[in-house]
Image (cartoon, rainbow, N blue to C red; front, side, top):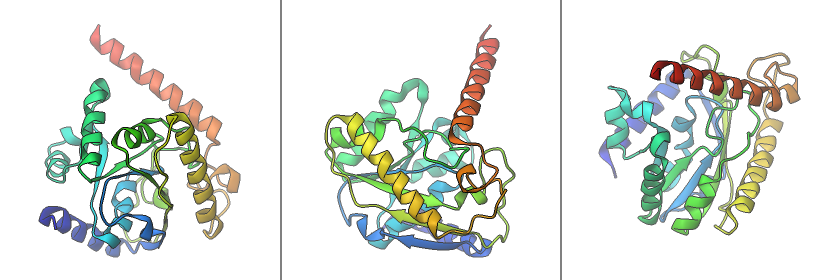
Length: 249
């Protein structure tokens, strides 16, 4: 047992209870009791990682999440992330983050990654980066797909956080492990297709009021379509690049 990680999980569960979050979890038996594995998670909100770790506790496992450098630079979250042995992702030095993740997998850790890289504004499954498959191949471990639905209602990009007592239902599904195989592009495509199917099943049993911002356009909500969301992401990335270029002049 890891006392600090265990204590933080206890605090998190108390917060979830105060918020009235209602979790429905399926497939948690697919988390191995021992050995390394890449935990691939869809990304709809800022609190995804706090929920994604819940199924792993069935087998008393802890997940080492890959998180952006800014989280580690924060004076409050940084020390916590380090003591929990999460993995810092510096996009300017991605090779080092990748190396650390592979090393953790080889040593028997569960490493949590977001193949979409960024939050999906459409709440659909975005295109995947190949990192999850490549890490699994190099470490010779499986990838375990995890899909979360409802987290976007708590706190997502472009909308106010709702961290009070909202009684929000959150569904989590853990899929069967996908053994690593080449080429990584084919494995990545299978992973994405699998997670799309898992998401559709979770959505089938979830109430989606028409017009709500957190409901995909496909289901009658006001969220942008996947294509519209991709365009918004591209515009935002261009704006950030322009700001960085301006600050360097």
